[in-house]
Image (cartoon, rainbow, N blue to C red; front, top):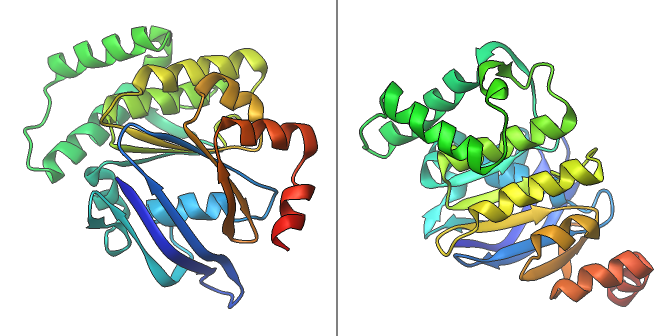
Length: 251
């Protein structure tokens, strides 16, 4: 589904490279996790895939179901089935959560040549998804993320993901700033969306999130590259020993 080959990236205003040849393939139905020390390029990878401004791809490719992601505008990537859950979701005062979600969904449906969803049908959809994710109906009535706790913001991101139903879900340190209970709720929301047609790339610092999400594959990223790949036991190794031994192996 997601295929990245020899991806090199630098900041627009700097010559210093951040990604230095990333290779990664995530198949349909799979959950991959990326861990690594600060500054290793994990979040940069998510930003580049989503089309954030300020980054220059100097070499390599990234495709989603064979489509060239790097040639698309951010909204085209979203319509093609890519979703990024942010580490720090922004507040949007004055824009109701339900209005935001319906507008986003219909924009994607229109881009794919599908009929827009009417108000009644959308209301039924969002109530069903919110109930499945244990999201209080009051959250749906509030402006987007305004006054939300950290856990509520992250759960709202999962609700957005459920409504938009993307093929490829990227979670950029979704566990950042969450207590144990909030992290479990977010993980439960992710697990509720897992199916054979949807893939996940979970970027995290902490093995504890992976206790709940249980990835198929774990990658360790350092100095702009994926330096080691393994199963869930690799995350446990990092939890016990840190990154020092792994980094020494590839130095």
